[in-house]
Image (cartoon, rainbow, N blue to C red; front, side, top):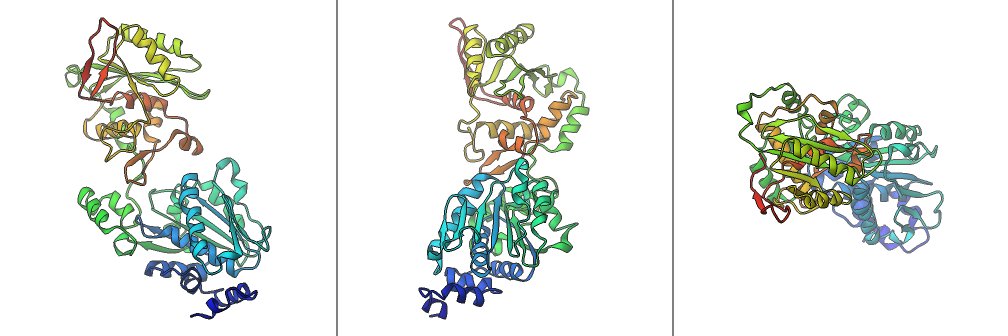
Length: 462
């Protein structure tokens, strides 16, 4: 039994821990938290103790959140008046993983009774105003929350750091002006640009850098790793990022590569390449004041100029769709039926048009690959761009919409398209024109028309 265990209920225990483990986070993790660190975690903890800045890029499932929690606990226990800021790529990641893990480890730690954990703060019970960690979802509109506090002992912790905006990194520099300040940034290296990427390239001289391959980590699921390597290939960007912890060759989380969109804009197809296909119409319905309502037409590999509206109500938009359909009939009209889009669908069906209700949040047909319907139709569209040599109009807003959305993986490792709110947080507009085009890639659905129109099933999205 260690000395720490013997005196843990004594008033002097906190002072003993602070002096004994000030430069020894590995010992603190073993003796006080009661965890057995992996070899890479030992390297990471020692780096944090001996360097002001540590950057860790890794594959999936190696135990990064455990390292983060141990670091916060150690820093809190060994520094006088510590101030710690913890953030992550998304609020969900921060709340359900990073911050939750801290609570879990504190509950089993020998010194856990010294601290209180709430939804947004973790603090020393005896000094709640001077010794604390704060869970802060980042926002470019609230970047000052990451500015320096002028305390001697400050810890910045960025979890899944690839997706944290550059401005947050810039402001956080203000916290690194004291000798006792430390910064830990870690995550999957999903982007080939940005501040986290720079930690391992142009700013490498400022950071102690560590790379963790999932195949060597004790916690990683080796069966899943073998499956990924078999499915994607060992040299694929997916395996490079999600398994090897290596930087991607391309922007691996950009769903539709820029170069294939640019080629599609330059491409001019002869009619014989697409005239055998039926027309399809996609309709995206605006939900907020700055969003656009869009009608777009596709015929096989040929996409036509989008029609964009602002400020229309559902009946006005339905009238525009009817006008477009009567000019050139289409096999089906695919409408984003979520929320107010239902009114457009109802009106089109009332008039006997072949309207299809596409529910973006519904289950994907291929539910083993995609997290929901919106992710699936965008995924199909991305595959179409890569393999079908399409011809699309030179439309700046369409171009931006197509190349802007990113993707990730949910807890079941299914593809998850970036949410519109997350895009807006990155300063991007809702991809309404891109969404309208993606709707035309829905398939195997029943079209409900008027009594005079028979139901029919569409089985191909091309």
